[in-house]
Length: 356
Image 1 (cartoon, rainbow, N blue to C red):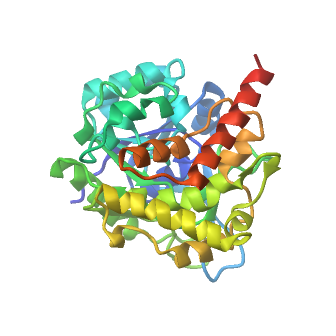
Image 2: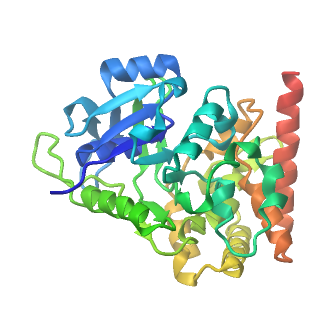
């Protein structure tokens, strides 16, 4: 009989995508979110829409019709020892907010395996990379002390490759998948913890869902890898596309950032890939530029980082800063990265001054 896991997911927006996959496989999930969203989810559940190859319409999956059990909670109501696995699905700046910070300390004290589905790798995960001076990276985090209690071997990372968004005109329990790619996760140090991920991978792989006209496979899988560098394959994409959406006076789409100057995008992509291989990644851990460029043709919106910056955000995930500092430790420098960091610093400064 296959094991059933109880999974805690921090963040009900992007987290509801991963939770839907777990619920389809019969596992139990608790989503951590704000009081109004928790009340909404506990009353109505979640709705996630998936594009399916060969279908003209999106497949709608309601959580209350699935095999697994879903609940939602505010941070103060979470008792970590009740769970087998924690999934960190919030933006980096949110972990230092009141209530969440205290919950993070309880999670660390419970010594639970924690899978971060984030562009910004947590400091304990970075500590698993040989030779990195993580103390020199703390300035890229809003509140690095949030991660102090976490043991590196208990923290893993999955790249948030699938693209999803909350339709602005709909309630906060609705999510729509735009790009249905896979979560690529690195292993934990303890094989017992990695086995949880492999069990979830197998369960998600086996799912067939019937939307009313016959069983079909639902995209967005979990892929568990033996290399700790596989999730870092997102770094070249962030530099070539996501962060280059940010212009001094506005933002452009990821498609335009990549294909508006394909040679510059390719150079940035290759430079970031070299940084990853310098750290220990194999070429096979990374995604070829040509494959990424094809995917970028369908990304007609600016990146979430760009949208947040130009909506007045005072914090965004600073993977640009992180890459710049790690590269410096490796004796590498990029004018493109330096320009990105300066532009983000400048825009954040304006946003903070506007609300001071």
